[in-house]
Amino acid sequence: MGDLKRFTSSIQAAIKKLQTWPIRELTLCHHDEADGCTSAAITKTALERRGYKVNFLCIEKLFPQVLEKLHTQKGALIFYTDIGAFHSKLISDLNKGKNLTIILDHHDTEPSTDSMVFNLDPELFGFSGEKDASSATTCYLFAKELDPKNIDLAHLAIIGSAEIPGDVTGLNKIPLEDAQKQDLVEVSGTKGKQRYKVKLPSGKISSTEASSKLSALASVGYYENGPKLAIKACLDGFDETIEKKILELQEKRKTVSKKMLAILYKTKLKETDHIQWFHAKDIFKSMGVKVIGTFCSMLRFQTKLIKLEKYIVGFMNMDPVIPRYGKLEQPMTKVSMRVPIQLEKLINAKKMPGASYLLPEASKLVGGFGDGHSLASSSIIPKGQEEKLIDYMESLFKNFS
Ligand SMILES: [Mn+2]
Image (cartoon, rainbow, N blue to C red; front, side):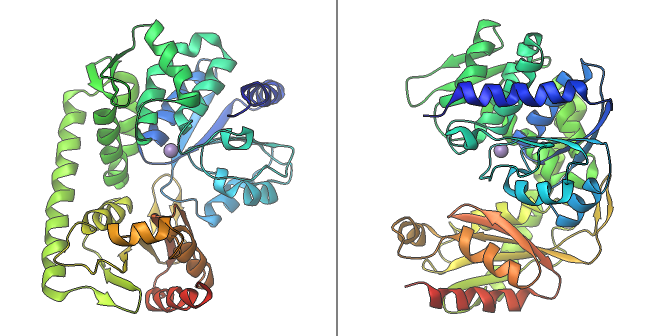
């Protein structure tokens, strides 16, 4: 079990520093899924209540060049929510004491090595980011410490926590209990099968439904102002316009996925010894790069199409422009890796290498970067390096036996 006392005093130390920092305008860099958007909504509200001006930067992946640009500033105020912790070392190296940087996240991490980078990841205090704490909960604990009045944001952390399967547990119970006290959440169902209905200005909605709607809005609608609409939905509720947009995006993803699937049934996936792969090229164009991951997850169950013992890899071309940031230096390809259920068992038994090793490791070798979990990972690589990446991954199996 984690050390809440030590975690809280680290949050307090960051707040103390924040109060001495002269700048009242900040960049809030956040991830595009539901946890990232609820995190951003909580943090934005708490900071605006203190008179800060918040500029959002929603990113699907933490591009080193985006980090470099952010941290070439001097005297700036930078927040990261649901993203950043995995790269805390790089952020520290780039920051060099120049900007007050506060990371509110729950991904795997390392302690910060720069005194101006406050890495408030509960993983550093003995909590599990996969079980005990969502990023939204981390943001909520920060907001509550900033001002106890921010407890009216507790229910948003329950939506953020919906990405963690099972009953709310660990640190996530803090916002749950706070939300219950204020009648902002209704808990139903028996132990192990609990359901949470969250009260938004538009009415009551289950936390899982709100979560999948926000994720569709922000990630499929990444290039259509989706992240901003998702943050708005967290705070003002799902109004008619937003509901319409979500439906439209879900339909679009469905139609294009069907088309991609039909193509694969015709052309089949390409195969190497351990990997089966395909390139979607521009089929998912205008949608955020998370769609290729969602599509690969669905492929796991297409047992007539896939080989049950091989890793699934999908590529898609990336839009070179990041909204509110600018153009990337070179054309990039998004890569997603998933595993069929049969292979999942072998990975869990450590008889086969995990997806979080294979893809990020090989991506580095072709000038890209990636991250993930043992059963699902993703990366970004320079366009044109796709086949080389597959070859490198194949060579990594030789080290594994
Ligand atoms: Mn998260």
